[in-house]
Image (cartoon, rainbow, N blue to C red; front, side, top):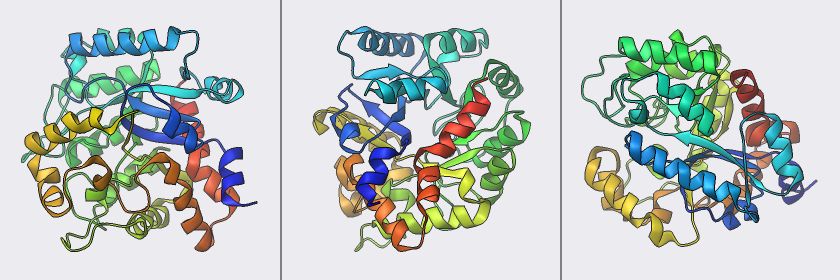
Length: 336
């Protein structure tokens, strides 16, 4: 079958959409079955996170809602059958729980199923990847992991500091996720993950969602914006390191009806985290589409990934595993 037919027949899960205004048109264009959508601000506190989750719950209650809330693996089938997009509520920071682990059960009840331990900076649980000194998991961080294991909440280590993330992967009794990051061995930037961490995640049965975010695929050449081929190099490096069964896609794309809606976010991240995006923005600009590799700047272009991989000899069953079946299997183990 051709790639368009393959995508139409496949379960496709995006491991990370960093922001959505609720519009699903781009996801539909890319045949996306479900997505881990960041449903509150990257550094949102308790009140802000509650308000933003309330907004999403209200969206889900609308009679004509295009979304179906994913609370279990069975919901993935329901979303496909009803022609809706599965909403996996996710966080990129656990600041919202503060130092109160009782809030974990509360937010799970609200629908949050994937939680990233830290964003770029330090919180009560541990250190983010942009901290100069990574002190590892705190005592509270270890307790949080144990509680999340008990509750069946997936742990995300994408932005977490190297030491903190490795300790988290080793401490968890359930598989853990890297929903949107690449290999530091290929491109040495703080947001990419070490071989040791990638191996630890895979050994625990977890998953690495490879990303088309430009900075994590860029060789530093200011005359050449990263291309789909650079992403493929990252993807195949990780596959060779830990096996295709531990690899997925986490684009880190937005999903909005108007790209102006994410302008404030791109400006915020450039101002607050220049060490992560400054050199790249100086070379290629800070427009949101320019932040991704040429060839995959929106969900409609995800077919380009499958086309490139088929040319490299990937079989249909391997493509289906990458596109969504691996995520389904691993999340099924975590969401008990």
